[in-house]
Length: 444
Ligand SMILES: Cc1cc2nc3c(=O)[nH]c(=O)nc-3n(C[C@H](O)[C@H](O)[C@H](O)COP(=O)(O)O)c2cc1C
Image (cartoon, rainbow, N blue to C red; front, side, top):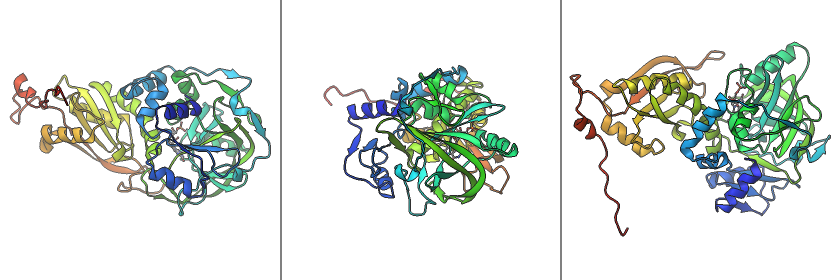
């Protein structure tokens, strides 16, 4: 689903805010997006001639459901299927993203937002960066990009990930690494790029398994990009480093300033009347795009040990540290086994609650109700001390150059099958844990 089709759907559904007045990408636009809780919006006049800006594209699960032609519960099965059967995309000769070609681009003419006063600079936040590794092939991933000049960025490139390992190989071999930075990317490509499949698996083949994703060759670098992007910045990740940050992270707290690789931009191609996708750092879109693509592996890990019905990496835990897992329980120990599997399925997970399939895992009050009525801390709590964990958790043990460590906790909030003496509960006793429902009123 490309960005234009999403915006047309949001408008038809009455979700889209159209803002025709001039809005400044310098601080003003981010405040507007934040104040409206990332409602889908199209800024027709971002004070950069020729461009429009879209916001709130990925802020709700429902948007992805619509983009994938399913409902909210159907998203994870679709992602699992695409992960199982990646389909290499076809390469086409002419593409919308190359309708206009500019060999002397100036980044100051793009509506790159500065979000907060304390930011190190204007930041590109919703770009998918494509590189090629000599050993593993194509890699598509997200990298926030701080603009440091009319033709350059410094990029946050997390150590050990696909882009980082390819960049290090290029630097060791004495050359720059080609990069294509895609802006205004189709929604299924955003999802695929946020996944971390095994090394060597092409995220664009996962995207193409979700929905047809033809690619086109870039003009100045030896890479291919999704044809339906709004714009592409072609350039090189150099060996030079420059300070990146400050910038707010998923935690909504300041991330530190680090020396990071500098990217030089040599060419800009775009659609006529390109639409720039702005994503609020630390906002709903950022969180959902981080967490949702991890749900397939979480689901699959739980499904190996129990009948997993659904999983939800929840917004309260930054869509990263907390999850609810819903199972159909067939054995007394299923809840506990699901907890252990969940930690294997999403390594950054810190706290997990396991519920039965009569509990709505998207409703925090329903999950809390299950904890209140089905859980006893001295029997149903799993605590794992000193585990490898997420560096995004400020309360974890964090030491430079070392994997973060923290305690992990799982709550088995499924209906117990035994009492405190170990006696098996009768079916009637287990039934007593179910919520009693009122009948529907005939005239309400
Ligand atoms: C909105 C968003 C922003 C992200 N920003 C960064 C970033 O600035 N730097 C980074 O290295 N990873 C970032 N990530 C995470 C990577 O895209 C993600 O871990 C990727 O799947 C890594 O895959 P790889 O190991 O195949 O490279 C971001 C993810 C999302 C969804």
